[in-house]
Image (cartoon, rainbow, N blue to C red; front, side, top):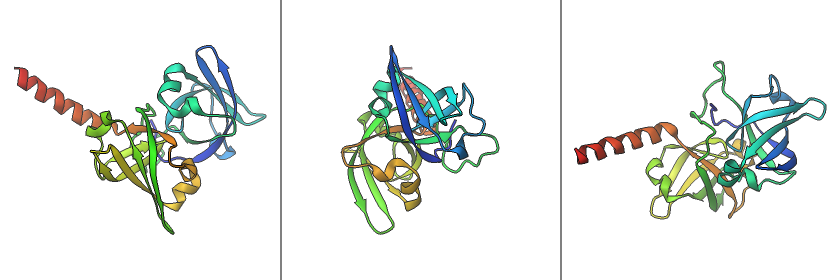
Length: 208
């Protein structure tokens, strides 16, 4: 589990394409390497990946991404020297500053508009219509691993808007995104559980 509070933007050092998967070598800053070992979970652009190797000499951490992950998320479009958001998995001692994020990305959404003022940046994204029932104003959404509050939503256009403070733009990769770029989206699991449960109960009543 993750909190959606991205800790740093890191560089993809190398990508090895293997049969059925890609292996990624990512440079992780010293401040976030403590306790990393094989089997640990780290969110890369919001995608929960398992550490498969760690090289202390060149400070890279290795991850394998299977075909499903490559097809569903933006991980498959990464190139060497690209920047990605990272977050170590939550611990009992860690403050839950965002919301509970699983790292099980639901798909991608596209940047359709960026409005920037002196200390504010509002970005609009177009998402899959399948997510409409889980998204609402003031609700949570995770974009490339960042826990964000939906500032506005247009269900007819299937677009949502979020506001970024300068700190978020500086620490994460969101500050470098352009119109047309895609980011990973994870809907709030608690909202999904409530909506899906209510739908099942109502459907059962109608058929009984």
